[in-house]
Image (cartoon, rainbow, N blue to C red):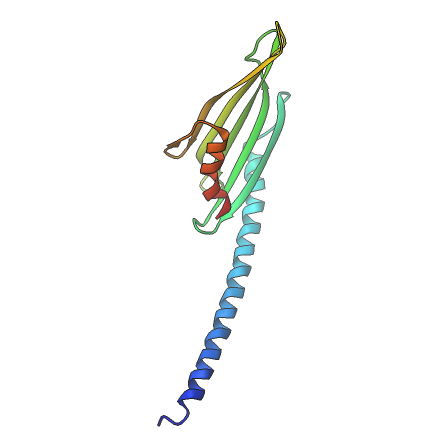
Length: 154
């Protein structure tokens, strides 16, 4: 009964390795397809939800399919001229938002106003007006980017 056990074990191990390789290949192809779909759908979502106007300085996005969460995320960055400084100065605002493309739900936002004054001397300053991701609060753009990382890198 046990004459060919070693050969049978080797054959089963070989078959197991071949099956693992096939599964990994299929998994990589599926991941690529999901990333490509996320990219296409993020562009459509962005075009449907955002538009430029005369005050727009920068309006762009990045997207990422998060395999771990099985979600398609988009970060929109919007810089626009704002008139908060009044005469003798200029101001612009940086708004960033993290959203789920398919659920159309916002996860977090960062907003910061930047001011420049020319009189009596040139000065500049900035103030964070909002910084949060889900229930986590933050105080700087660096902290916000740190909170974004798990969503945009996994």
